[in-house]
Length: 216
Ligand code: ADP
Ligand code: ADP
Ligand code: ZN
Image (cartoon, rainbow, N blue to C red; front, side):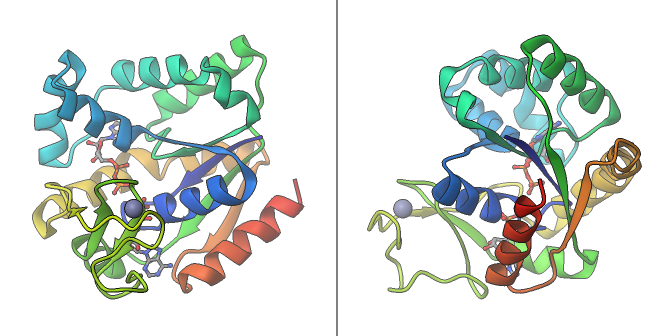
């Protein structure tokens, strides 16, 4: 199964992708995580991407589609993938269609996480991640059961993204509306666009996604 989670920064794509991975054994492919790994490793791609990401703009389509195409060729992706943060432009969506056709794979559904922009700054500025296992948390909306200890792995170190500040969020939201929102009619036209209420509490969004999965 190949699913796309589509929505603005802070909509809850990563949170829900982690749950789908745990429950259904799908592989979460987050282009943001892949780029951050490249930045941390100091690769050529990482060097090029860093400044663009800090400005809240989009990294070039060629770099991104290359990364995704290589990743989809790894054997673990055979069990199914959730695309989180990709595609983000029409050029990327078209490239994805071509690469899936070449690889004999099929896109099953695109799930739009509908949210109001006004909640996104608070979600993003309160977001943090376990440094050891990558589990996502929020200062207010998703706290670990024991303060300062990761529920999943017991880790006690957490990180925050340098681009998760109110300034950068504005550019990232602009990029979403200008370049990514046009993918909604693109996928609606293909008859595979589904919607969930991204404003609902996290568990309720998970339940809505599960209900969508039953229909495909
Ligand atoms: P995205 O991957 O779409 O950028 P995340 O999944 O990282 O978004 O969510 C952003 C932040 O908001 C995280 O800290 C997460 O815990 C929190 N969050 C996610 N979904 C919800 C929700 N439905 N209600 C409240 N907070 C949420
Ligand atoms: P969020 O879900 O909070 O928007 P991501 O982790 O998906 O954040 O992306 C962080 C940054 O990485 C983006 O602002 C952008 O610079 C870059 N990026 C991630 N995915 C893509 C993509 N598919 N195309 C272009 N740039 C991307
Ligand atoms: Zn952890």
